[in-house]
Structure formats: structure tokens, C-alpha cells
Length: 178
Ligand code: SF4
Image (cartoon, rainbow, N blue to C red; front, top):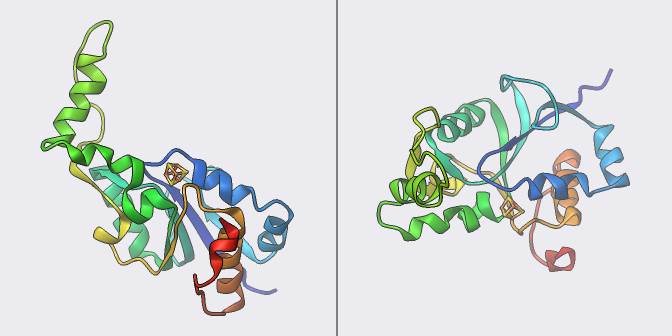
């Protein structure tokens, strides 16, 4: 039996649009599905990130301590880690709060106090926000970047297909996907 490539996907602070674009590969996704084993993803039920993952695609920026821990844990267990989409690559819309000096405090105040209709209070049972939203490469080593908001399905397919074939990935001339 041929060993399938073990693939994971993670959803940090993003809108899920990058995962939607991943699924938008349509029939090309079936071709990929024959060659991979999906071992962890928000679209399946696995609760713990497994060991020995070959490729992990991560959507979203790092906005809180739980996500920072998740990302570092995944990095330790993954051979190839991919920043999927502009929030992961640059922070993008998730990082808009970085414009505030004390952005963690400001965003919590805005969400739970200033705009609350009843019982304004900052919850204590939510993950602690980082002082600034970070793109993935500011926390761990990233091997490949797939830009776009969301990244075009064709570009995602190109990168994954090249990796599955053991071929180099080059973004030159890939504007045709956008
Ligand atoms: Fe959503 Fe765009 Fe961020 Fe992807 S890059 S999570 S589509 S906002």
C-alpha cells in the first residue's frame, strides 16, 4: 500500500474564506484527495494535532496566546508549513487592531463594553489576546506562502500539486490564478 502524504489544515484568526477557497478546487480536489490523508482540520473531528504531519496549511493570523501555542505545536510536528492567505502571510484585516497603541485592551473594550446593549463587561474565559496580531512567520519558520484574500483555488492547487510531485514551487507568473 502506498503511503499517503499526511496533510493538516488549521484555522487561526481568519474568516474561513481561505478554507472555502481550498474546497473550491472542485474536481481537482478529488485528484489531491487520492494522494493525501487528511489528519487534522476544522472540517473534521480530530481534537489533537497529530505527530508526523507532512504538510500543514494554516489560515489566519496569530491573535491570542492559544493560537500562538497551537502554531508552535503544529510547527514541531510538521515537515512543511504553509501560510495560507493574506491574514497568515501579513496579518491583513485581522491585524487592523494593531493601529491602536494598546490594541488588545482597546479591541476588548470596543467589542464587550462600548458596543454592548446589556451587561457591558470583558469576559474572563476567553484566550488572552496578544498585544499585537502577528503573521505566522513572526512566530515560527514558514516554508511556503500562498497569498491572496482569499488565495485563488488554482494557486492553492498548484502549490499542493507541486509538493505532492516533489517539484519546486515558484510564484513567478502565477498572477494568472488571481
Ligand atoms: Fe478571510 Fe482573506 Fe483572511 Fe483568508 S486572507 S482568512 S479570506 S480575510
